[in-house]
Picture 1: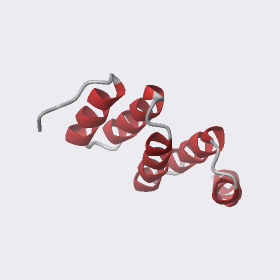
Picture 2: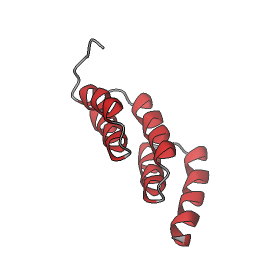
Picture 3: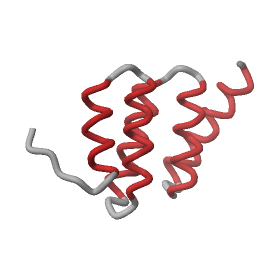
Picture 4: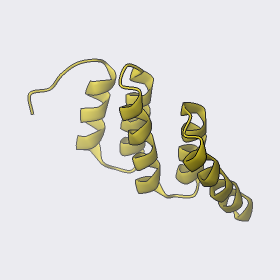
Length: 88
């Protein structure tokens, strides 16, 4: 677990300096692996909002919400990931 903590710390430095899509995805995966669901969701949302045309990124947010037990938010993001609009 100590190695993951160090990897996440180092990736956070890289992500803040170079917020490329691949870097943010990797950082979010490290955050999730360490049980930092809120941080991972925040990172993934940043990615999805920076690239609204890439539906996969919205799907990753939805999956992170679902993994964290937040069904309503997951449904909203899954809907967004399909390009659909909700009325709620």
